[in-house]
Length: 194
Image 1 (cartoon, helix red, strand yellow):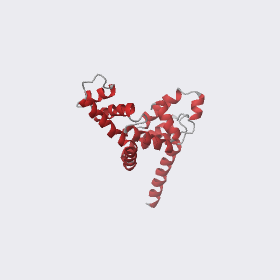
Image 2 (tube, helix red, strand yellow):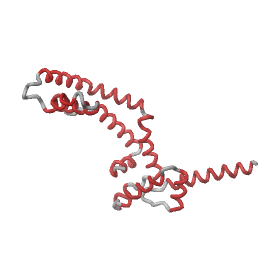
Image 3 (cartoon, one colour):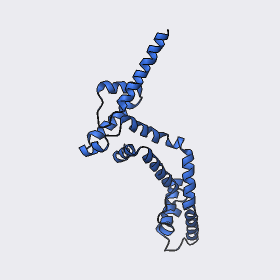
Image 4 (cartoon, helix red, strand yellow):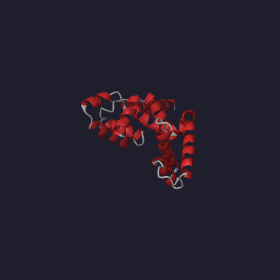
């Protein structure tokens, strides 16, 4: 019985090691049919992932292939999975970034509210700025994201040209975090619109 257990454990380790070894190949190197078959059996969805990667890499020039030769299938998969799980796993970071945004830009939003209130009172004026017109005309109908964008236009026009919305700020911070962890992989995904 002990021999059978040892054989089974050894086979599992060999299968996992061989799959891992295959995935450590560069995305610029195509997998053999045997390698691809082995990975597809072990990793659900790898076939579609592999097809997308190879279509992109096949269009690359030699210089682009050289640039991404250090990106392995495994590291690219890890990056894609990290991005997919980011919002669930990183809620503390997102809360921190929202707090940072509030410290930097919340007063600008309050000033914009004052500007909007002023123009609502003086709505009949012919000089009402376009950004304020857009905000007030769509105030009741627009989604919260659209309202945020309309308000951002007002802030950029009258208060702070460097203003960014909270969601844009958090996305920017998220991209910085991913770039720090997976620089080449993120570049590949961004460049190719993967």
